[in-house]
Image 1 (cartoon, rainbow, N blue to C red):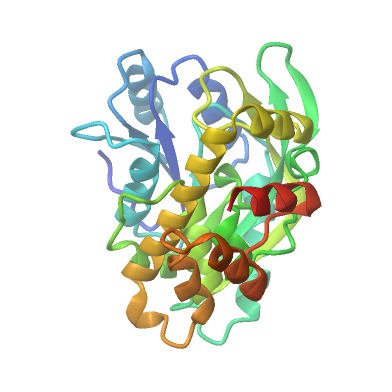
Image 2: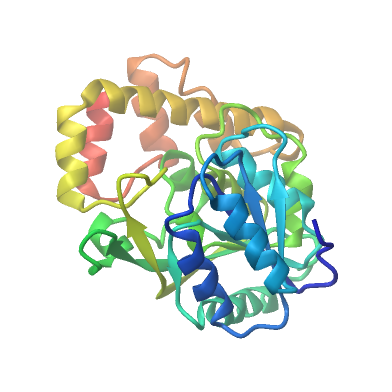
Length: 311
């Protein structure tokens, strides 16, 4: 693979069997006309034409390189390992099947610079910027509105207590700074989603900023690893799959316990994180007490009623 050089922004594009969409995604990123980006296509063992297409773009454009994983890592580790390889001051995450707005990078970068201006030690403080996205139906080519509006997620609440219980950050909209990399030396198996883990790190040890603008078309199709859905679909899914939701809640508790385990030395005097780490083993009443005491809430009363019933 080519060297990243001194690119200001490293775009980690995680790919796996994305031949149907990756050309459109790469073209949309390149349409921004930036001369300060490095696009690293991180292939996770594709068996279709993804690598051939990626190599074609690598040969054509000096700002693109291809990294082929020796074995399939899964999308969480694929993204995280790409971030760890980066030598750039800023890293953006990119799915293989979305369509970026031409000015997505510019607008996100401005939001990051504004966030940096508030920091006393921006070089050592992990920072994260995330934006909204437009849900895009791949079959009908129809835009289906704002992701955050349709999902009813409260993006204003990105403090550690709320983020331990619920992720708000859409990974394909995220930019982080280089200060996040030292926090990724240990990646426990309990991590549910890469963007959630990054959000927990930046919320606890740095700062998160939300740009209330859509910056890409978030493609929805059957092959999505993780996709958007309407709030009504969310409610119907939760009601019809209660066992699955309880399992997901237990996985969230396990992720919180892993977060405390990995960063325990840095979390002295943080009772909320310690309490969340005990949620998995806590009894019926203690789980509810911890939730109320420390504010481990989700977005909206519908989600929180369901949460209290499932705890």
